[in-house]
Amino acid sequence: MSTEQKSVSAEVIEAMKWQIDHTQKQIVSLKKAKKRVGDAEVLQVKGTLLKTYANQIDLNKGYAVLPDYSHPGKDLTVYLDNKKTIMENAEEYFHQYHRDKRGLDTIKQHLVQAQSDLAKQLKRQANFNPDDESQAKVVKQQLIDEDAIKTEILHSSKAPEPAHPRRFYTTDNVLVEVGKNSVQNDHLTLTAKKDYYWMHVSELAGSHVVIHSTDPSEQTLLEAASLAAYYSKGRGLKQVPVDVLKVRQLHKPKGAKPGLVLFTGKADTLTVYPDSKMAEKLAEKK
Image (cartoon, rainbow, N blue to C red):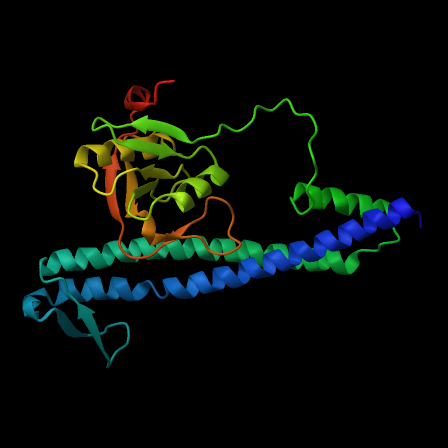
């Protein structure tokens, strides 16, 4: 085996080890995230129980102990916000159920994909013959395509990534930044101040949006939500739901793909029209 062949095989072996280790860490992280989200179904049960027993609940107590229909013979303690009605409390539980279920479904999808990737990676590693020159070249190209081996691009006709996300100023002159791709979404979200507001369309692919304000007006929130809707897969729709959170509620699972973040606590939702004319009007003037 030539020196060049030894070098290629050694590079492939090292890259496969790194890739497998990376995928294993991603699986561990996703399993932890799945555990944190927990059983979303109990939130639906709590909402249903509040509606069923609304007339029998003393709101001033701050909680109610109700028969758990999902576990016959047992009771379930349901905590209440006594500043809201019983039915409003029920809707809060349903809202959180749907949010958690979507988050859990996303985690499960990524976990299944990561486990499938790991099985293929382990199989490829087991079948790799470092003395087979043609196989080494094929596997090296596969690893390059999978970004497990980095290649230096000396010349490229592709325009460089812009230094900043898209920038807009609302009617109240508040800066709103909108990510242009998954990597930029990550950077925008993970470097934003914790008390700033963050937006993303519900259940659709789209840009991360950060409002540079700790107390934005309703006008700013609606305009930023419209930008989130416009820079998403919901652009062609008339009504798009947009989730609104504080940046501090967000976290990124270790090893997760660019653009994937999870959140804790409650998210508000604004339903808006993705207005292209408004986006053009609010865009930062060069």
